[in-house]
Length: 329
Image: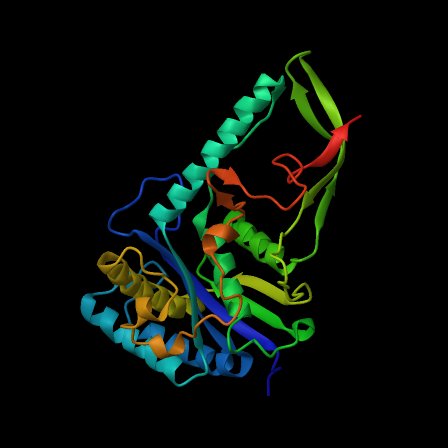
């Protein structure tokens, strides 16, 4: 018998998951990372069955993806994978976003940053404000992992003994590192992350670089009365596996088309809702999110909340102190 506190998440991406400033492909307005979450016992059984399923279908360049198969084989592969999931305790977890919504949110934030930069330049300071872009792939992976943590399969698991092994299709190492960093960042909430100085900024009035002493602080602002469960002891690993990835490839591809169909019928539909996936063959394996009920991908992509064209910061914090609690020497 395997350890009851170990879980396996097999996930993959489909659709528009590039950078937020890239042109939108109208054929794929949705980006998604989807996966299947198993207990360790069920994963062992699934792992033994997958190679036989993969071998039934054509193998192209050593990799098998559902989009590379004939329509007949695509349908047959979907049935094989769905049947395998149905006889397990596997749950479907996913995160999806409409590319257009992310582009609009980035444009809104960029406008605020540009106005801040202009105001500071009038005061004689030059700030290197980066362009507001986001690699949606790593953000979607992080949010899919968050939904995993709050799924029915894990909700009664003690974080101090919980281990989650993540398998995905091969990705470049920098992207894997970025995904791992995103996940680790969430697990460290509500811990305050501090980076000690010194830091510098350029004073344009006297053309000199000022040295700043202090600490760069990353903080999470919670609404009054809310609490976040300490997940810092949850262990996770991130690995690539072609055979495991086939299962998630089929699931993510099928969910993409289900969500695309729902979105084209109603562009205001919530992409993570029972209505958006009701027509999917595995809809019964897609649990509603337990907590937090108000989870929002847009607010989780390192964005500061915006109201009426302005950033909304915790009380006593400003656009500068939010990112740098430091002062000139």
